[in-house]
Length: 361
Ligand SMILES: [Zn+2]
Image (cartoon, rainbow, N blue to C red):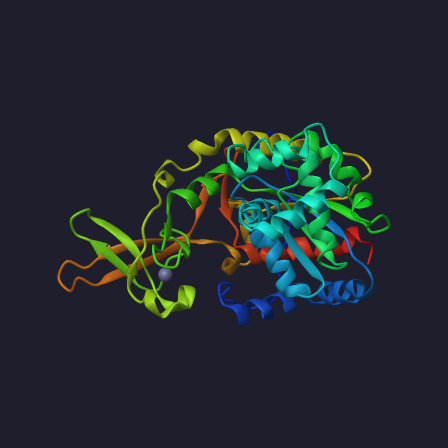
């Protein structure tokens, strides 16, 4: 983030072991080695206790990925990852179902307090006219309902606060949902905009199963080459999505993705303001995560396999065979410092250790 330095977290340890962090089993072994003690302590804590963590990071910074991985590693049954974006998308479906809609409205009539009449909000929701204009008071009532329906668990909230006025709501949120005595914490995530930009620019989607990969950062096993367009592309298969029909399906770029972060610049600016505001809050503990490491410090702080690789491709003129080249991915961070971008697992190691510390266990 511009003019805001997050501390760099050391995950390098004295061990010659190497892991493929894209592999599920190896990843579990990795976490055991790097944060085994804290994972055990957290599991013990979660038997009787909960916490609420607000994830604050720019759009496409990987908030959901980190929370889901934390949940996967620590305790699938005692932790919820709760995305406001998903909840609002789900609302569309609920409103189309007569009985579900009735149930929703009667629950909101009990819980909603705000400046706009409920009927008006529901009407505009049905017209799908105002995704961004959903009042904070309605979001609060909806989140309360959702959380109540899931039993008492530790929750990562993703997408709230989303606007500046919601920061003050979040300070009292745990009282509102009946978590009064449980700790709450802000998890602030710093990812360079250059990282977000390339994640979007090189993203490819399977038209059949909608699986998403990245030509530069997360390729599929098989790569194709379009002679007419002189472009390489990814090929979906059932190891990507589990769908046997996807064998050999050519993945495509979504229209607009070639523009990278340009279309979401305004959103990113709001997100940055939110993070900076939360950063300066008193009285609520903060976990600071960063996904980049300055290149000149990387050797002492992270293991090589924790750095995200970037891929490029070459086609042999004679055999037509496509060769994959791999090297550490370099970007400039928002302050212009050359950095490596980290894979999600080392960021999650940092999350696990910092959450353990904040909870005082
Ligand atoms: Zn597919």
